[in-house]
Each structure stands twice: as C-alpha cells, then as structure tokens.
Amino acid sequence: MEQWLEERGAICLLVAGFLYGLNIPCPLGILLMAAGGLAREGLLPWPAVVLCAPIGIFLGEQPWFFLGRRMGLGLLLRMARFSRDPAALVQKIAARFQADGPRLLLTGRFVPGIPAVVVPLAGMTGVAWGRFFAWDLASGLIYTVAYAVCGNVLSQWFSLGEIVGGAIVFFVVMHFLHRLLSRRPKPQA
Image (cartoon, rainbow, N blue to C red; front, side, top):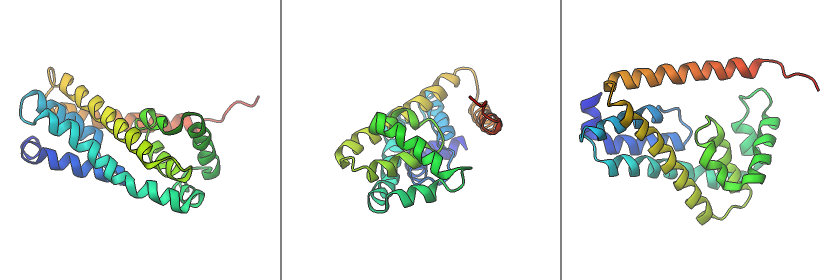
C-alpha cells in the first residue's frame, strides 16, 4: 500500500475525497493519516496532501448542495431513512443548523453522517453558494489537516501499517461504542 500511495497519492486523495463528498463509504481518514506519514518521510508532497482531499470533498458535495436546494425536505428524509427516527434526526440537525448555519460543517465534518445531512440542508435553506463554498472548503481543509498531522506525528513511532491498522481498530471500536450508547434508553424527566 505504501508504494501505491507514493506513486498515486495525490489522485488517490482526490478520488477518496470525492467519494467521501458523495457519501459513498470511503476510508478517507485512514488514507489521510497514511498520507501524513508519507509526507513526513518526504515520499508525498505536503501540498498534494493538503489540497487534493479538500478539493475532492468539495466537488463531491456539490450535487448534494444543489439537490437539497431543488428537492428540499424530501431528500433529507430519504437520506435519513436508515436511522431509527428519520424525522426526529432531520429536525434535530435542522435546529442545530438554524443556530450555527454553515459553520456546522466545521465541527460536523468529524461526526459521521452530519455532512451528509448538513450539505443538502444548506442548499435547502437557501445558503448562498459562495458562502457554502467558503465554509465547505474550510471544513474539508481542517478535516484533512487534522488527520494528516495525526498520521505525521504517529509516523515518528509507528510504521505505516501499524498506523493504518490502529486507525481501523479505533474507528471500529468507536462505531460500536456509539451504537451501544445510542441504544440505551434515555431517562424520563
């Protein structure tokens, strides 16, 4: 994998960012950590790491922004149909978006599923495309830099394989913890 990333790192990050932006499951965080480690060793240029993934994310999210503008609430409910209560989920995220606006992309990028709903919600609520462009690109850049720096720092002590393996275990454990905690009944007030 290391040699493959060295040779095709920039295009790999661009495509992975694009798939992530389209809401197609993609291990972008893990790839960014690996790219950060390769950049530390001088095997992948930092500008490629920092620019390719955010551009891919932005390009992948454009259809969702304009579909949100065109289809509105129906699109959001279809996207959330796999949750236990789609209407409540959309309502909760919409209320948060009402308070924070497109800034929700900055922090929501790190929470799985939030960008999938926030991007069409931005289109649905009439956020100007230029404003969406700025917040979306900034959030993609922050997301990219956070994961790449993490991989860069960890590569001081661990091999690329250990970083990727550790990241996979971490994400799987976090996924199951989230599912376990979200199933607990909420206390009645």
